[in-house]
Length: 251
Image (cartoon, rainbow, N blue to C red; front, side):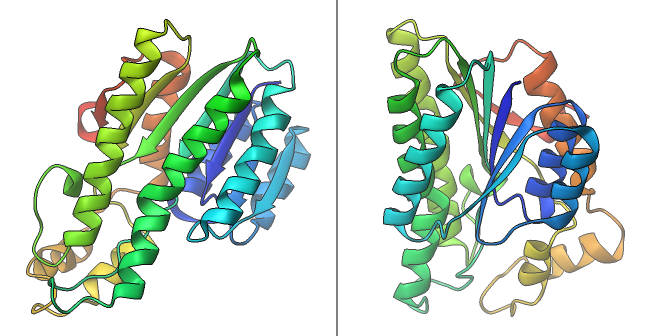
């Protein structure tokens, strides 16, 4: 059985991605703060492996320990392919620089950037000596490629994710590794994160009215639609390692 490690599979895009993997007979390792009963039930029905690993990704010690455990498990199996979808993320703090709480800034950097870095490091360590191939996906954002008023932390962390992806891909290529890593920009989706964005003040987030309009005019894609594009990409396509894929180019 192949495996998929998904962070933040409790809800939103992570839940939709995990559900599609289960439908394909791929075992799930859900790394999140809380479990998902519906995924557990679906996995039982499909007779697919499902395990939950509680982890607060804002805590680097927890992140390291959990990914070390998960890496040992999946690369100690006889799986042909290990999929990794680093989906967990936070959009807060939403405010202009000089008005941001440093604690919220630190949490964002830990969840959005440091945890993917630690996870990548631990999984590549665990992969040594294994015949399995790892395909890693870092969930990015359009905000990683352009400045957005009020999103300095989110923009910076997602830009960091993009550069992490490119650099790790370069290293893998230079060592002729079979592993691949890509970034994926999912566009605007109908998620709880969007609700947080829409509740911002215009002073804190200059584009808030545009995001409110996305919801009012039904312009937000469902997470199932985006997840289908992503899972199809990495399971059926010869992907280009190091590339930032945009959902709009896949639908």
